[in-house]
Image (cartoon, rainbow, N blue to C red; front, side, top):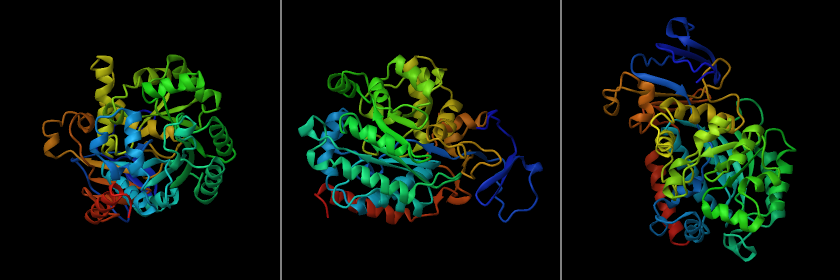
Length: 441
């Protein structure tokens, strides 16, 4: 996934202190290393995948019966009362569970959008969880300030005062944001959506973010037709016009979904470097529509992939998301060549890095972070696919990777997570999910 999109047979790389120093053929490698991993003849090695949109806490509310067949607004209205019972422990454990799933599917960097803060919930709990897991993390301090009594969608009990939101946003930036190269934790400000925050909060958040280097802006935009109707009725603008009127376009902004963007907004996003997190599985699950990804890419928009929350996907598997993007593009365009397997992998790597504003991840080259994954192609699901093992990663069934390194640290070893006990983590997740449904601890 370098600038030339090279595919190196008998390839090898050498990393020191979490950074790639050399990449080429095995023959040209340095001869000495503290550890050697020999994967010759059986593996495809790639840069770690990048997830640009998620809601970790939703791991506790997968496949909720009452919400299984709802469009976005009804889905939210069904789940808000359950999410009102969230606690800091639930946020912490669900973040670890989501990170575990992501890591096993080859993800080495993830963003997360936490916009609910009932009880003792905080972004701090997520940051602590991801530090323990060793995943590169973009923590998005979400918010909701306009409840149903003021014409918004969320219950009044789940919204916050805007002064409190801005105060906590400032605290998080100053406590955790690291704008250095190879940073493991960065902070973004992320008012939730046009139907849950005020225009003032959008403007104030943008001003705050832009007063700190590397703090980015994130929100949901144009997700489904009701979202589109809300913007037209409430603001007399399309979602794209709304975003631009608030200063929410530019190279430091990325929007989730953008299923219903008009052509003019797509061109405007391309010219300004505004990014988009494409979430195909969630969009299909909620019947929201199909984002015009090919049109966006042709225009020059930065597009990455997001698994979205596990209550609307209902999984955190980034390889599956890349496959869904590839196949959905072909259905949408009625064109079997609309998106190739390598194009989908590009969205999951280089595309995600551009969306998150990173030049140190997303491809393999000297000076890049040692975020590396490897998939063993000698498995039943790849039988007969040896002619093109790279395309097989997308076109065949790839449930998990065999190796993953983040900043040079091995987090997946022969298909097994090294940074957490999955059995114990699953038990804790199930226990807390049951508590959540029952109204809290």
